[in-house]
Amino acid sequence: MSLATYSHAFAVIAYGALAVTLVHRWQPTSRSPALALLTVCALLSTGWGGFNLWAQLGGGNRSVALASVLDLARYAALLGFALLLLGSGAGRRRRMPLAVMALVAVGALTIIVVARASGGSAAAWLAGYVPLASLALPVVGMLLVEQLYRSSAEGSRWRMKPLCLALAILFIYDIFIHSGVLLFGRFDTDALTVRSAAHALAAPLLYIASQRQAHWSAPFQLSRD
Image 1 (cartoon, rainbow, N blue to C red):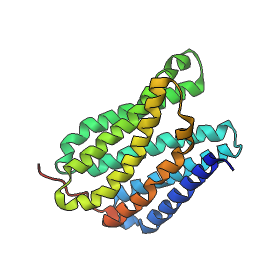
Image 2 (cartoon, rainbow, N blue to C red):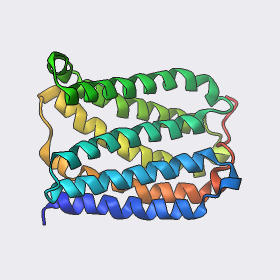
Image 3 (tube, helix red, strand yellow):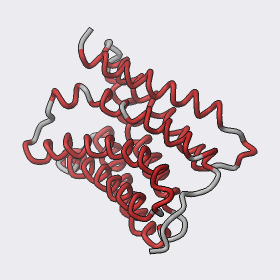
Image 4 (cartoon, rainbow, N blue to C red):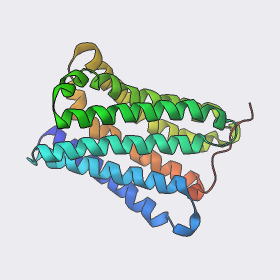
């Protein structure tokens, strides 16, 4: 089997285990939207890795398309999760502009993907904006990570560190990949091959973060400064 196959399989295993753990912990009576959204992120990431693996094993264009849709959906869920945690205390003032940026980035990439899939004259014109829109998502994500960590109180940063590190792994890696496309007009094939494995490295850190924030029933304590 190829390196890409192992990479996708690693993502399926890592995020599948995280999803099972979070589903087992989540209860409807806990009223924890953050935990629910993190569970959705894990499930979407598991499906994303699974369809990538299927495509690598000969699943055809449909599996590639489904993997792309799930990749966009999990990004939207991750950004929503970060915005939800930022939406209290001092972070509330910073959430609105970042939320607008996230919605614009996700919406723009969704429109581009749909237009390209439908074909027509607009598809060729929009194709040139795919790298820029794809780069915008992890850039907005890193802005959210920075705000999450900087707004947290000193006493709560031990809970924030694994979460911020996990999200930073995802977003920085994708900034590296998509900035290369924007600059050189092509993907770094080696970096793209192990992207699933690189993203899977965030799963253990997300698990640690979920353990440190019991039930995700309350937002992180944010600094008044």
